[in-house]
Length: 168
Image 1 (cartoon, rainbow, N blue to C red):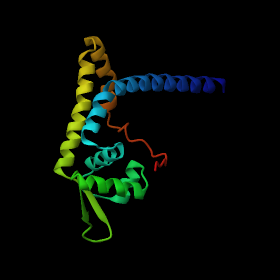
Image 2: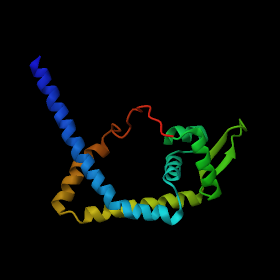
Image 3: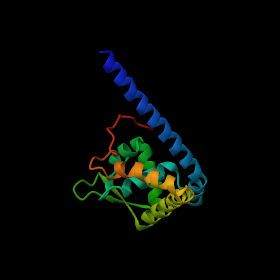
Image 4: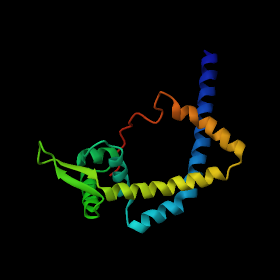
């Protein structure tokens, strides 16, 4: 029995160590890109909630109803509706009636919305490119070697179970 406790403690310590290191790395990388990302948002008067909705729509193959958007970005239905209204007025999303149920409004990205997201993501990619370019070659190789198995694995390690949190 004590062998099981010892093994569990080793696993917990390993998870804690990897989580702490990854968290520190990501926080510092985010801090590095924060000024450029905030400048990108400020230049267009886009709010964080609006950006979250644009990003959610970009991940979909077709239009989404407002309630599905609200669930995905963890906003109340009312807050999501108001945010979509602002995005429609900026011509970043399009709102159309569902052909089978006119009460349901389907939301999709416009070309302008796609261009905005591409510009915003280019800023983030540039920050990452700059960071990686300034690492010594052996660190770049080690970073790639550590991340490649996770990214290339047949199992999607980025698909986490929902914990039911909702933000309004």
